[in-house]
Image (cartoon, rainbow, N blue to C red; front, side, top):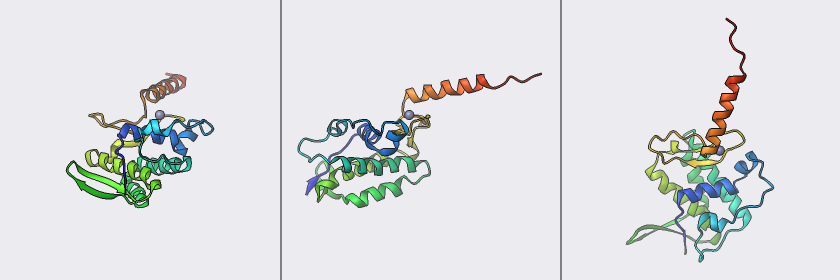
Length: 175
Ligand SMILES: [Zn+2]
């Protein structure tokens, strides 16, 4: 039995935005080299590191959970991810831990169980993909108001500037 590491949600978000196909394509970064997954995920030294194809497959499946949340289907996608990894719960004095049988299942199980844990404390409407132009990066909104629509303050301010320019460029009413 192999231990499944617990991932912080901020790590999950960074990993998906770096490795999933759709955020890379939206940003025109398909050809860019990938950042080191072990650093992004704070992957434990003792756990085998997934191959690049395993990393992108897991990132794409996790992206699906974020993008489905808008339609209230995050749990459908999450259950799909968990079914492929089949993590087994193990009770211990410090609470519930997860294990898997094969090395290739560690990453999908880590992503799936970390999302499951987060969704136990937050509504799925707080997961989403950026509304900015040329950006579909995922976000996990932990703000008190929970009204986030952009991955970052950069995308939010770009959106505001573009909206301002659109208003300015509209013809003035003639009366
Ligand atoms: Zn964005």
